[in-house]
Length: 296
Length: 340
Image (cartoon, rainbow over all chains, first blue to last red):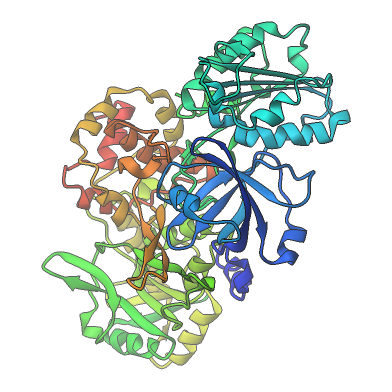
C-alpha cells in the first residue's frame, strides 16, 4: 500500500536534507531593548540568498555552532530584499551563545517554516495588529509588508503594549509612523518613569486592550485582528475582540511553542492534531476553540 | 498474490538462505520471558513462538539516538555518513509491527521527507510471521491483526508448515532462490489456514470498541479518569520508548572535548516528560501529569486520526507490559466508555 513511494526518495542529494542548516553571517546587530537585539543576517552563499523567499509570520531555526538550535521568527519583510532580520531575546543557552557572537561570525539557518500570516486572504480587509511585549517581533514583518503593499489593504491599525517605554521594540521606527495618516499607530505602556538617561514617554499608559475603545468606525466584520504576545495577553485581547463582535475566524494569533525540528516530525509543538511548526504558528481563534490547549 | 508453502523441516535452511539477501535480524530470547530483535548468529536462535519484543522495530528506522550532523568551527555542518549501508532482512515481524512501520512511513514522509529515516527504510526488508494473541494483545480491536501489504514475504503458520505470501519483487527473488525448499500450497493447506485463522480470531481476550473512540475522547475530555490515571502514572516514559509508533525526538548538540567540533544528535523523547513542551521563557503547556497522560492517549486515538486518518496505536500490548504502575491502555478507554 505505502511501500512504493519509498524508493522515490532513495537517491535524494544532501541538499534535500531538511535538517541541514545553510551557513549565514551576522552582518550587524542592533540593540533594541535590554537583552533584545535585532540580528541582521545574510546567507553565505549568494545563490541561496537570491532564491530565498518567505512570508510574514514565518520562522527559521537558527543554529549557533557548538550550542544548538532555536526557532526565531522573521522580523523583516520579504518586500524588502536583502538582509534577514531576527529579533532575539537572550533567554536560554542558545540565544546566550548567539549574543556572544560578533559581527561577521557564522551561524546556521534553515527554513522558513510555518504557515505565516494569510497576507493574500487578508487583502481588501482592514488590518488590526495587536502586539504585546515581544509579540511585536513577528508582527513587524506583517506591518511593514502591509505598508509596502498599502493599496492592498483598507485601514491599518497597530496597537502595541509594553510594560515600560524602555521595553518597546522598534520604538523609533514605530514612533515615526505616528505622523503618517495611512496607519493608526497606537503605543501604550503599563508604567512609565522618567529615568534620567531615557527618552521621556508622552504616550498612553494602560493596557493594550484599552486602546480598542479609541478606534472609531471600524467595520469589524471586514477586519482581520492579528494578535501576538505572551500567553496571558491572548486571554484579555481575545475577550476584548469577542466583546466587539469580531468574527472568530478573523481573529488570528501567532503562537509560541517548542518548535524543535520545524518540519512536523519531532512532536514537541503539537497542539491537538496541529503542529505549530507546520499548521501554525498562525492560528485563528476558531482553531483555538477546537484545540483547547492552545490558549488556556 | 502468489502463495507458496514452506515445510517446518526446511525453515532453518530457508532462513540461512536469507543471508544472501542481507543482514538477517530475528526475534531471539533475552532472559526468560523477554525477546529482542537482533542480528542472527544461527537459525536455532529464532524464537518462533515469541509474541512481542521489548523494543519495537522502530529502532531500525529511528534509533534511540542518532547523529544527524557533524559540525566544526571552521566548516560548519556536514551530513553524517550512514552507520550501515547493508540491507537488513528483519524476520519475524507480526502484523501489528508491520502496520507500525507503515504508520512511521506516513509520519516521516509528507511535506518534509526525513532523509535519515528513509535512508534506513529503503534498506529494511520485512518478512512477517503470524502469531497467536495473548491477554495483552488488542490488535484485532485496532484493525491491525492482519496485513495485506508492508512486507516482502509473510509466513503464516500452519501445523507442519508455513504459507508464504509474496509481497514484493524481492520476496519473489527470495522464493526463486529457495524454490527447492518450498512447495506449492494445496487446497488442504488453504483449508488449514482458514481454520487456524478463524480460531485465532476467537482467541483474543481483550476487546476494545474503537468505533467512535475519537468522539468519546472529546466528550470525556474533563473526565475524572484522567486525574486518576495522572495520579497513578509515574511519567517515566516507558510506554513511549516501547511503543512501535511513538516517534517524538529531541534534537541537541553535543560538543567534543576539543572544543572545536561536535555532533547534532536526535534522541527519543516522550510527551510525558514535563520539559517536552518547555519554551525558552520557562513556560510549559501541560503542567500536570494528568494533562500529559491525557495528551498521550488523545494523540494516539484522536489527534492522529484527524491528521493521518487512522489511530497510531496498533494494539501490540507493549505499553501494558512495560508500565511500572500497571496502567492498562485498554482499561483506560473502557473506563472512559463507561464499560469498566
